[in-house]
Image (tube, rainbow, N blue to C red; front, side, top):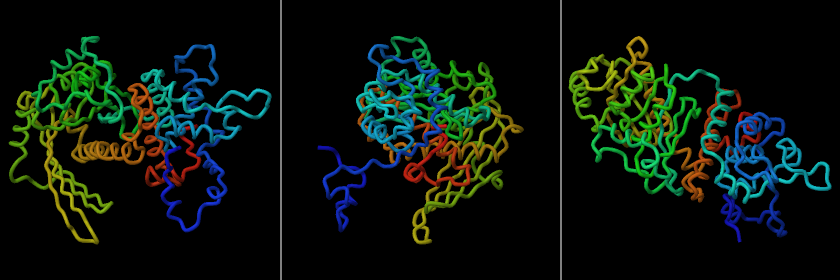
Length: 437
């Protein structure tokens, strides 16, 4: 007995039974969305940089081949080891030869593909940091632009177990917890129930780094403990209000040579009150504004900026504060049925010459777009929360290729035959060149 596929309901509701179901034979596998000549580059990256955790005795398939097939399968819409195993079995022998799979004994042109159990077992043993480094370096070959802006984006993988505790093994998280100056009731909850990941990514969705939040701490402390390990010289770090910590601002601007753009909420009451006092009341016309239309909504944003003294605001390195008014109108049949308005305040260490009002608005829009679109893509399109992988290491190793798939989708949108949505790209793009190239 096997679970029904995605098209089972449509087949059952059809007037006539499909021919492949009428004769009792299993349906043929779908055409693999892979082109044989585009697999070698990522395979070379994995072969040279990944450490095989298995014993040399009894190995049937190389680690690079297994990781490459898994990455291709996830980019094509597969969720877990079972779907990845079926994807591997659907590859033809030419693709198996290109991926350096094991040749079937007694034959010249037939190759044996890895099974579901191989993927399930190996994803529990591969080093997450090594796999993330391989994917990041490979993405950099497709998008070699220098790093200028970095966004923080947290995501909870609901069905996976939490990451191991780290306060007793490493003193850095202990110091990070003490450096978070926000009240405990205003901090994010600890990652005790499920795996929580934090991605450091560019506006083009290129993942630069990823951390797993230990179960005995929260996202703010995990990020504060990881920032000293990063090279942030000349980089603008953008995050939500949870990361507006004085120690983080001081570290980024004074020790790392970077800049920040954070939002202000109740975790920094003094700075928020000062920003509201300076940017409240009868304001002049907005210094920057934008209007977006699509998907049944009209979003209007207006921004005001003001220079401020860091000592007055109480945030180290602060140079400018800004206010954004956002009005969202929901449309049905051309009529406005709902209108919502909200106001957000933020602070940045960039000088006015480096961050104009238009540029600030663009950075904020990019950050809100990442925070809004990434969970939808991962949960509804890639169905990350529906994946039944419980092991923490395996769940994290599967999340890395999912980030790569989203990056590839954004990367192909600059071409002439670009797909407009991630589901459309997964279903109809039968030869996604970037991931395999």
